[in-house]
Image 1: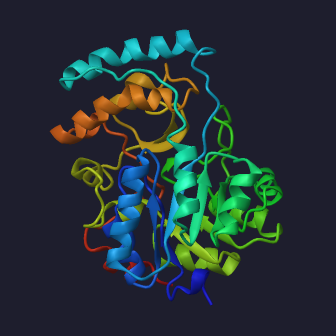
Image 2: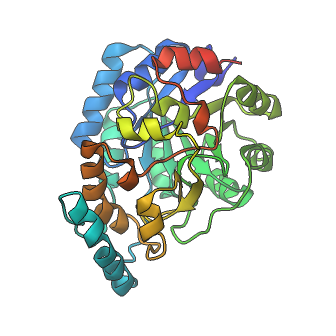
Length: 336
Protein backbone atom coordinates (compact mmCIF):
# COMPACT_ATOMS: atom_id res chain seq x y z
CA UNK A 1 0.00 0.00 0.00
CA UNK A 2 1.41 3.40 -0.96
CA UNK A 3 0.74 6.84 0.42
CA UNK A 4 -3.02 7.50 0.49
CA UNK A 5 -3.50 4.27 -1.49
CA UNK A 6 -1.94 5.73 -4.64
CA UNK A 7 -0.77 3.18 -7.19
CA UNK A 8 2.45 5.07 -7.92
CA UNK A 9 4.42 6.43 -4.92
CA UNK A 10 5.38 9.61 -6.78
CA UNK A 11 4.04 13.01 -5.79
CA UNK A 12 4.23 16.28 -7.69
CA UNK A 13 5.69 18.63 -5.10
CA UNK A 14 3.89 21.94 -4.56
CA UNK A 15 5.70 24.67 -6.50
CA UNK A 16 4.30 28.14 -5.88
CA UNK A 17 4.20 29.99 -9.18
CA UNK A 18 4.46 26.84 -11.32
CA UNK A 19 1.96 24.28 -10.00
CA UNK A 20 -1.49 24.21 -11.55
CA UNK A 21 -4.67 22.19 -10.97
CA UNK A 22 -4.06 20.65 -14.40
CA UNK A 23 -0.59 19.47 -13.37
CA UNK A 24 -1.76 18.11 -10.04
CA UNK A 25 -4.73 16.33 -11.60
CA UNK A 26 -2.62 14.82 -14.39
CA UNK A 27 -0.17 13.36 -11.86
CA UNK A 28 -3.03 12.03 -9.74
CA UNK A 29 -4.77 10.50 -12.75
CA UNK A 30 -1.50 8.78 -13.67
CA UNK A 31 -1.58 6.99 -10.32
CA UNK A 32 0.54 9.38 -8.25
CA UNK A 33 -0.61 12.41 -6.29
CA UNK A 34 -0.35 16.01 -7.35
CA UNK A 35 -0.05 18.72 -4.71
CA UNK A 36 -1.64 22.12 -5.11
CA UNK A 37 0.50 25.08 -4.08
CA UNK A 38 -1.40 27.73 -2.13
CA UNK A 39 1.63 29.93 -1.50
CA UNK A 40 1.11 33.48 -2.81
CA UNK A 41 -2.53 32.75 -3.74
CA UNK A 42 -5.53 34.60 -2.37
CA UNK A 43 -8.18 32.54 -0.59
CA UNK A 44 -10.41 32.90 -3.63
CA UNK A 45 -7.68 31.71 -5.99
CA UNK A 46 -6.89 28.75 -3.72
CA UNK A 47 -10.56 27.79 -3.63
CA UNK A 48 -10.76 28.03 -7.42
CA UNK A 49 -7.73 25.73 -7.79
CA UNK A 50 -9.24 23.14 -5.47
CA UNK A 51 -12.46 23.27 -7.46
CA UNK A 52 -10.64 22.98 -10.80
CA UNK A 53 -8.62 20.01 -9.52
CA UNK A 54 -11.75 18.22 -8.33
CA UNK A 55 -13.37 18.72 -11.73
CA UNK A 56 -10.50 16.80 -13.34
CA UNK A 57 -9.94 13.94 -10.91
CA UNK A 58 -11.51 11.98 -8.08
CA UNK A 59 -8.12 11.53 -6.41
CA UNK A 60 -7.35 12.92 -2.94
CA UNK A 61 -6.79 16.66 -2.59
CA UNK A 62 -3.42 17.69 -1.16
CA UNK A 63 -2.41 21.30 -0.67
CA UNK A 64 0.57 23.16 0.75
CA UNK A 65 0.56 26.44 2.72
CA UNK A 66 3.42 28.72 3.74
CA UNK A 67 3.78 29.25 7.47
CA UNK A 68 3.82 32.93 8.53
CA UNK A 69 7.29 34.24 9.28
CA UNK A 70 8.76 36.66 11.80
CA UNK A 71 8.32 40.27 10.71
CA UNK A 72 11.83 41.73 10.39
CA UNK A 73 10.79 44.91 8.56
CA UNK A 74 11.87 47.26 11.33
CA UNK A 75 14.87 45.26 12.46
CA UNK A 76 16.38 45.09 8.96
CA UNK A 77 14.97 48.31 7.55
CA UNK A 78 18.27 49.82 6.37
CA UNK A 79 19.48 46.56 4.79
CA UNK A 80 16.15 46.06 3.01
CA UNK A 81 16.36 49.62 1.65
CA UNK A 82 19.90 48.98 0.46
CA UNK A 83 18.79 45.85 -1.36
CA UNK A 84 15.91 47.70 -3.01
CA UNK A 85 18.26 50.43 -4.22
CA UNK A 86 20.51 47.77 -5.73
CA UNK A 87 17.52 46.37 -7.65
CA UNK A 88 16.60 49.67 -9.34
CA UNK A 89 18.96 49.32 -12.29
CA UNK A 90 17.98 45.69 -12.91
CA UNK A 91 14.32 46.63 -12.79
CA UNK A 92 14.83 49.52 -15.21
CA UNK A 93 16.46 47.21 -17.75
CA UNK A 94 13.25 45.20 -17.69
CA UNK A 95 10.92 48.19 -17.92
CA UNK A 96 9.71 48.15 -14.35
CA UNK A 97 10.55 49.14 -10.76
CA UNK A 98 11.21 47.09 -7.63
CA UNK A 99 8.09 46.35 -5.66
CA UNK A 100 7.26 47.80 -2.27
CA UNK A 101 8.87 46.09 0.70
CA UNK A 102 6.14 44.74 2.92
CA UNK A 103 5.53 41.96 5.36
CA UNK A 104 2.41 39.83 5.20
CA UNK A 105 1.24 36.43 6.35
CA UNK A 106 0.05 35.28 2.91
CA UNK A 107 -3.58 35.23 4.10
CA UNK A 108 -2.65 32.27 6.29
CA UNK A 109 -5.48 32.59 8.83
CA UNK A 110 -8.07 33.01 6.09
CA UNK A 111 -6.76 30.01 4.15
CA UNK A 112 -6.84 27.79 7.22
CA UNK A 113 -10.40 28.94 7.96
CA UNK A 114 -11.46 28.06 4.41
CA UNK A 115 -9.83 24.62 4.68
CA UNK A 116 -11.70 23.98 7.93
CA UNK A 117 -14.98 24.79 6.19
CA UNK A 118 -14.05 22.95 2.98
CA UNK A 119 -11.93 19.98 4.10
CA UNK A 120 -9.31 18.41 1.86
CA UNK A 121 -7.38 15.18 2.35
CA UNK A 122 -3.92 16.53 3.14
CA UNK A 123 -2.51 19.92 4.18
CA UNK A 124 1.23 20.41 4.56
CA UNK A 125 3.02 23.44 5.96
CA UNK A 126 6.37 24.75 4.80
CA UNK A 127 8.66 27.26 6.59
CA UNK A 128 7.98 26.30 10.15
CA UNK A 129 5.52 25.63 12.96
CA UNK A 130 1.91 26.64 13.27
CA UNK A 131 -0.20 26.99 16.43
CA UNK A 132 -1.21 23.54 17.74
CA UNK A 133 -4.88 24.40 17.35
CA UNK A 134 -4.38 24.82 13.59
CA UNK A 135 -3.23 21.21 13.43
CA UNK A 136 -6.01 19.88 15.65
CA UNK A 137 -8.72 21.91 13.92
CA UNK A 138 -7.76 20.53 10.50
CA UNK A 139 -7.52 16.99 11.85
CA UNK A 140 -10.97 17.40 13.40
CA UNK A 141 -12.46 17.75 9.90
CA UNK A 142 -10.62 14.69 8.60
CA UNK A 143 -7.49 16.30 7.12
CA UNK A 144 -4.04 14.77 7.47
CA UNK A 145 -1.47 17.39 8.48
CA UNK A 146 2.21 17.37 7.56
CA UNK A 147 5.27 19.58 7.85
CA UNK A 148 8.31 20.04 5.65
CA UNK A 149 11.39 19.35 7.77
CA UNK A 150 15.11 19.54 7.06
CA UNK A 151 16.49 18.04 10.26
CA UNK A 152 15.77 15.69 13.14
CA UNK A 153 15.15 18.68 15.41
CA UNK A 154 12.47 20.08 13.11
CA UNK A 155 10.94 16.62 12.79
CA UNK A 156 10.69 16.30 16.57
CA UNK A 157 9.00 19.71 16.75
CA UNK A 158 6.49 18.63 14.09
CA UNK A 159 5.70 15.48 16.07
CA UNK A 160 5.16 17.61 19.18
CA UNK A 161 2.62 19.67 17.23
CA UNK A 162 0.64 16.53 16.43
CA UNK A 163 1.65 16.06 12.80
CA UNK A 164 0.38 13.02 10.88
CA UNK A 165 3.29 12.93 8.43
CA UNK A 166 6.62 14.55 7.59
CA UNK A 167 8.14 15.74 4.33
CA UNK A 168 11.91 15.22 4.59
CA UNK A 169 13.65 17.74 2.34
CA UNK A 170 17.30 17.35 1.37
CA UNK A 171 19.90 19.82 0.13
CA UNK A 172 19.30 18.89 -3.50
CA UNK A 173 15.75 20.27 -3.53
CA UNK A 174 15.07 23.09 -5.94
CA UNK A 175 13.45 26.28 -4.76
CA UNK A 176 13.02 27.30 -1.15
CA UNK A 177 14.55 25.29 1.64
CA UNK A 178 11.98 24.42 4.27
CA UNK A 179 14.01 25.53 7.29
CA UNK A 180 11.83 26.50 10.24
CA UNK A 181 13.35 29.92 10.88
CA UNK A 182 13.97 32.56 8.23
CA UNK A 183 17.48 33.27 9.50
CA UNK A 184 18.56 29.61 9.61
CA UNK A 185 21.36 28.66 7.23
CA UNK A 186 20.26 25.41 5.54
CA UNK A 187 22.31 22.34 6.31
CA UNK A 188 24.03 20.29 3.62
CA UNK A 189 22.32 16.97 4.29
CA UNK A 190 21.21 14.91 1.31
CA UNK A 191 17.62 13.69 1.14
CA UNK A 192 18.50 10.16 2.25
CA UNK A 193 20.29 11.60 5.31
CA UNK A 194 17.34 13.76 6.34
CA UNK A 195 14.99 10.84 5.68
CA UNK A 196 17.06 8.52 7.87
CA UNK A 197 17.26 11.17 10.61
CA UNK A 198 13.47 11.44 10.94
CA UNK A 199 12.31 7.89 10.22
CA UNK A 200 12.63 6.93 13.87
CA UNK A 201 10.08 9.54 14.94
CA UNK A 202 7.20 7.21 14.20
CA UNK A 203 5.42 9.07 11.38
CA UNK A 204 5.11 8.29 7.67
CA UNK A 205 7.74 10.26 5.76
CA UNK A 206 7.65 11.64 2.22
CA UNK A 207 11.14 12.20 0.83
CA UNK A 208 11.95 15.08 -1.50
CA UNK A 209 14.94 16.79 -3.05
CA UNK A 210 17.28 16.12 -5.98
CA UNK A 211 15.31 13.31 -7.60
CA UNK A 212 16.62 12.70 -11.13
CA UNK A 213 14.93 9.43 -12.09
CA UNK A 214 13.39 6.12 -11.03
CA UNK A 215 16.60 4.90 -9.39
CA UNK A 216 16.44 7.83 -6.95
CA UNK A 217 12.77 7.13 -6.25
CA UNK A 218 13.48 3.46 -5.62
CA UNK A 219 16.42 4.19 -3.32
CA UNK A 220 14.39 6.55 -1.14
CA UNK A 221 11.51 4.08 -0.94
CA UNK A 222 13.95 1.33 0.02
CA UNK A 223 15.30 3.59 2.78
CA UNK A 224 11.82 3.89 4.25
CA UNK A 225 9.90 6.72 2.57
CA UNK A 226 6.20 6.09 1.92
CA UNK A 227 6.37 8.24 -1.21
CA UNK A 228 8.75 10.54 -3.06
CA UNK A 229 7.86 14.12 -3.98
CA UNK A 230 9.39 15.49 -7.18
CA UNK A 231 9.44 19.15 -8.10
CA UNK A 232 11.96 20.25 -10.71
CA UNK A 233 11.23 17.53 -13.26
CA UNK A 234 7.56 18.55 -13.23
CA UNK A 235 8.51 22.15 -14.04
CA UNK A 236 8.97 20.92 -17.60
CA UNK A 237 5.53 19.32 -17.79
CA UNK A 238 3.09 20.65 -20.36
CA UNK A 239 0.67 21.40 -17.52
CA UNK A 240 3.16 23.51 -15.54
CA UNK A 241 2.98 27.29 -15.69
CA UNK A 242 6.74 27.74 -15.25
CA UNK A 243 8.12 30.35 -17.64
CA UNK A 244 9.46 28.81 -20.87
CA UNK A 245 12.81 30.56 -20.29
CA UNK A 246 13.03 28.83 -16.90
CA UNK A 247 12.31 25.42 -18.37
CA UNK A 248 14.90 25.96 -21.12
CA UNK A 249 17.55 27.00 -18.59
CA UNK A 250 17.29 23.67 -16.76
CA UNK A 251 19.09 21.95 -19.62
CA UNK A 252 21.41 24.75 -20.73
CA UNK A 253 24.75 23.66 -22.20
CA UNK A 254 27.18 24.09 -20.67
CA UNK A 255 25.19 23.55 -17.47
CA UNK A 256 24.66 26.58 -15.26
CA UNK A 257 26.17 26.60 -11.80
CA UNK A 258 23.65 26.07 -9.01
CA UNK A 259 23.69 27.98 -5.74
CA UNK A 260 21.64 28.50 -2.60
CA UNK A 261 20.66 32.16 -2.50
CA UNK A 262 18.22 34.47 -0.77
CA UNK A 263 18.53 37.17 -3.45
CA UNK A 264 15.00 36.67 -4.74
CA UNK A 265 12.92 36.33 -1.58
CA UNK A 266 14.98 36.72 1.58
CA UNK A 267 14.75 32.97 2.22
CA UNK A 268 17.43 30.50 1.18
CA UNK A 269 16.52 28.74 -2.05
CA UNK A 270 18.36 26.60 -4.60
CA UNK A 271 18.53 28.15 -8.05
CA UNK A 272 20.66 28.26 -11.15
CA UNK A 273 23.08 31.16 -11.24
CA UNK A 274 22.25 34.10 -13.50
CA UNK A 275 22.86 37.83 -13.71
CA UNK A 276 20.35 38.48 -10.92
CA UNK A 277 22.03 36.20 -8.39
CA UNK A 278 25.48 37.52 -9.30
CA UNK A 279 24.37 41.13 -8.86
CA UNK A 280 22.09 40.85 -5.84
CA UNK A 281 23.04 37.90 -3.67
CA UNK A 282 25.47 40.00 -1.63
CA UNK A 283 22.87 42.57 -0.50
CA UNK A 284 20.07 40.11 0.26
CA UNK A 285 19.07 39.72 3.91
CA UNK A 286 16.84 37.30 5.82
CA UNK A 287 13.64 39.30 5.44
CA UNK A 288 10.84 37.19 3.95
CA UNK A 289 8.49 37.91 2.26
CA UNK A 290 9.79 41.49 2.01
CA UNK A 291 12.44 40.65 -0.58
CA UNK A 292 9.98 38.47 -2.46
CA UNK A 293 7.74 41.49 -2.96
CA UNK A 294 10.74 43.63 -4.00
CA UNK A 295 11.83 41.28 -6.77
CA UNK A 296 8.44 40.10 -7.98
CA UNK A 297 7.88 42.85 -10.62
CA UNK A 298 11.32 42.13 -12.04
CA UNK A 299 10.73 38.40 -12.22
CA UNK A 300 7.32 38.94 -13.80
CA UNK A 301 8.79 41.25 -16.44
CA UNK A 302 11.65 38.84 -17.14
CA UNK A 303 9.19 35.99 -17.68
CA UNK A 304 7.21 38.13 -20.10
CA UNK A 305 10.39 39.06 -21.99
CA UNK A 306 11.74 35.52 -22.00
CA UNK A 307 14.88 36.61 -20.15
CA UNK A 308 16.29 33.88 -17.87
CA UNK A 309 18.88 36.28 -16.40
CA UNK A 310 16.35 37.91 -14.07
CA UNK A 311 14.19 34.89 -13.31
CA UNK A 312 14.32 32.80 -10.18
CA UNK A 313 15.58 29.67 -11.91
CA UNK A 314 14.63 27.23 -9.15
CA UNK A 315 16.31 23.90 -9.81
CA UNK A 316 16.97 20.71 -7.91
CA UNK A 317 20.18 18.80 -8.36
CA UNK A 318 18.57 16.49 -10.94
CA UNK A 319 17.49 19.40 -13.14
CA UNK A 320 19.35 18.36 -16.28
CA UNK A 321 17.12 15.29 -16.54
CA UNK A 322 14.09 17.53 -17.12
CA UNK A 323 12.24 16.69 -20.34
CA UNK A 324 9.21 18.53 -21.64
CA UNK A 325 6.01 16.61 -22.22
CA UNK A 326 2.77 15.55 -20.53
CA UNK A 327 2.91 15.05 -16.78
CA UNK A 328 1.62 11.49 -17.28
CA UNK A 329 4.80 10.60 -19.18
CA UNK A 330 6.97 12.10 -16.42
CA UNK A 331 5.14 10.00 -13.80
CA UNK A 332 5.63 6.89 -15.91
CA UNK A 333 9.36 7.57 -16.27
CA UNK A 334 9.73 8.09 -12.51
CA UNK A 335 7.73 5.05 -11.42
CA UNK A 336 10.08 2.59 -9.67
